[in-house]
Amino acid sequence: MSSSEQWSDDGKRKKDDSEEMFYRSKKTRRTPSKDANPKENTYPRRRVEHRVKTLTQKKIHMVEQMNEIMLLLKNLAGDIKEIKGEQTSNKEETKLLQEEIRKLRDEQEQFKDEIKRLRDVHKKETELQEEIRKLRDEQEQFKDEIKRLRDVHKKETEEMDNLKKEVKAANEEIERLKAENRRKNIIVQGLEISANNPKELKAKMENFIEKELGAAIKIESAKSWEKKHAWLIEKELGAAIKIESATKLGEKTCLVELNNKDDKATIMSNKSKLRNHRQKIYINDDMTKKEREKQKLIRKFAKEEKEKGKEVKIGYNRVIVNGEEWRWNKEKDEIKKKKFILMMI
Image (cartoon, rainbow, N blue to C red):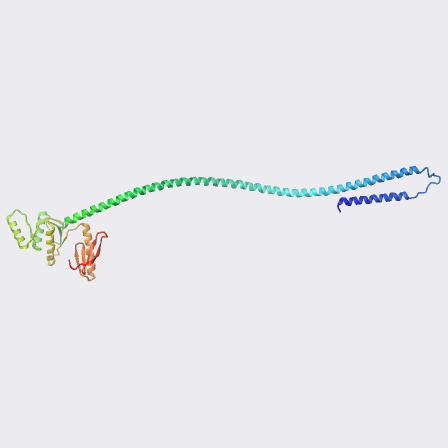
C-alpha cells in the first residue's frame, strides 16, 4: 500500500468518527424548559443542526485537504530526499566526470605530445629517406664510376699484360742473343794473370791454350815465321784456334772470345787435360747472369744427388743422374726429370 493510499484511509476513518460523534450528539436528550414551547424551538434547532452539519462537512473537507496536503508534503519530502540523493549521486558522478575529464585532458596532452613526437619522427624519417635517396643516387654514380674505372683498369691491365709479354719476349730474345753471342766464348778460371794490356793478355791466353791444351793457334800476323809456325801446328794437330780477344775479369779469371763455336768445341773437348795440372784451372762456358744462376742451381742439384751416392754428369742445362736426364724447365724455372732414359751424353 502506498503512502498516499494510507493517508486517504486515515482521513476517511477520521471523517467517519466525526459523523458518528455528531450523530451521537444529535441523539442526546436535553431537559427542556418547563415553560418552553416545542413548536417555537423547532426552527432554530434545525438551523443549528444545519450549521453544525455544514461546519462538520467543512471540517471534513478541511481534514481531507489537510490529508492531501500532508500526503503532498510527504511525497514532496520523499521527492526532496530523492532529489537530494540524486544531487549527492550527481555530485559524485560530477566528481567522477571531472576526474574523468581531467584524465582525458591529461591523455589528450599525452596524445598531443605523442603526436608531436610522431611528427618529429616522421619528419626525421622523411629527412632520412631523402638522405638515403641521395646516398643511393651517389652510390649509383659511384658504381658507374667504379665500373668505368674497372673497365679502364681492365684495359690497362690487358695492355700491361701485353706489354709485359712483349718485354718478356724482348728480354728472352736479348737473353737468347746474348747467350748466342757467348756460345763461342769461354771463361778461364784459376790461371795467374799478371798482364793488363789486351794484347799481352791475348798472347798469354794463346800460349796457354796452345801449350796446355795442345790446340794450334791461328796466327794472322804479317811476319812470315809466325805464319809458318801456325801452318805447322795446324798441319800436325789438324785444327787451328783463333782468339778474337781476351778480357781480364779478375785476378784469376779471363774471358776469351773465340772466332766460332767449332773453336770452342775443340777447346772444351781438350779441357780434360787440365785435370792433372799443377794449378786448379777450369774452363767453362761464358754465360749470362741468368744462365749463371740457372747453372748454379743445376750444380747444386747435381751435388745433392752425388752426395746420395748416385752417378752424376753435368752438361749445359741438364744433369744425368744414374742414366736419367734432368733438364731445365724454362716455364717453371726449375730442373725437371725427363721421361725417357739417356744412355750416354
